View 1 (cartoon, helix red, strand yellow):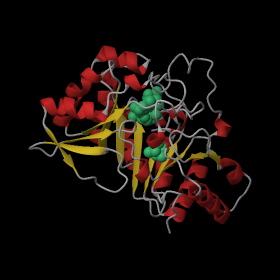
View 2: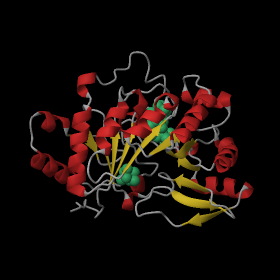
View 3: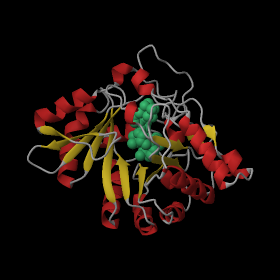
View 4: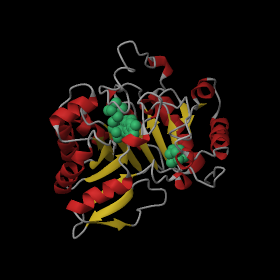
Length: 335
Ligand code: SAM
Ligand code: SF4
Ligand code: SF4
C-alpha cells in the first residue's frame, strides 16, 4: 500500500500546519524585524478549510496508510475553532495518533476541549526556565510562567506531554542542566533540538549551533545518561535514559548528525502546499487541484507522484558551502 520515494523511504508521517501566524516572535523562527506589523500573513481564503484538511488527510491515510498526524504552525492554537478540526481528524479511520506542537501559551484555554476532541499528545516548546532570557527569546515578553501553566493544563486534561528546547550556543546553552533537572522531576521527556538553518530570516551560522555531542557531554557530566534503542524506525530524536531511572531525554541533531536516510515525513502548509523536506524552496500545490474538483483517485495519484519523485536529503548534503537561498520559513510549515 505504501509508496516509496527515490531513496526507498515510505511516507509515514503527515505534519499539518494550520496557520502561519504566531503570538510569539522567537528570534530563530520569526524574528520580529522580519515578521513586523507590515508582514503579510496568509488571508483566510488562502488557508485550507477544516473540510479540505480532513479530506486530504483521509486521502493520505488511504494512499499510504499513515497512522499519525501532527498539527503545527505558526502557533496552531491561533487558528480559530481548532478543536473542531481535531474532532474531524480523529474520526478518520486508520488515524490512531494525533499530536500537536505548540508554544503552550494558549493551552490553559484549550487543553480540555482538545483532549475531548481526540487530541492524544502535545509537544510544548520552551527554551529556558530563566524569565529574562525567555522574554528575549520569544520576542513578545511572555513569561516562563505562562508556558508552565500551559503544561499544567495539558497534564490535567490528560494529554501526553513532551518538551522541545532549541539550544543556541551562547544564548541558552547554560539552561540545558536546569531544564533537564526540572523536566526529569516532572516526568516529561525533554528533547534538545540543534539550532537549524531553516528559512532565510534567522541569520543562522554554524558557530551558533550547540551540537548533539556537546549536549550529551553537558548532561552526562551532571546527570549520567545511557543510550536507548529507538522506539520505531525513522524516530528523529536519539534517545538517552538517565542511569538508574526511567526518565529520558531526546536529541534532534539535524545539523551535526543528519537522519535523512530514514526521513518519512510529509509537510502540508496552511495554504495547502505539500513539502517533502523542511528545507525545500518550493511546495507542491494541492489546494488548486482540490478546489478545481479533482476526485479522490486523481488526488491520490497526485500525492503518489509527488512522493515517488522525492529525493531530498538536505541535512546530509549541508556543508558550509551549501547555501540554499530561498527556503520555506519554519513558521510556514512547522517543525
Ligand atoms: N509554535 C509552535 C511551537 O513553537 O512549538 C509550533 C511551530 S514551531 C515552528 C515547531 C518547533 O520548531 C518548535 O519546537 C520550535 O522551537 C522549533 N524551531 C523553530 N525554529 C527552529 C530553528 N531555527 N531550529 C530548530 N528548531 C526550530
Ligand atoms: Fe512561534 Fe513556534 Fe516559531 Fe516561536 S517557534 S515564533 S512559538 S511558531
Ligand atoms: Fe528529512 Fe529534509 Fe530534514 Fe533530511 S533535511 S531529515 S530529508 S526534512
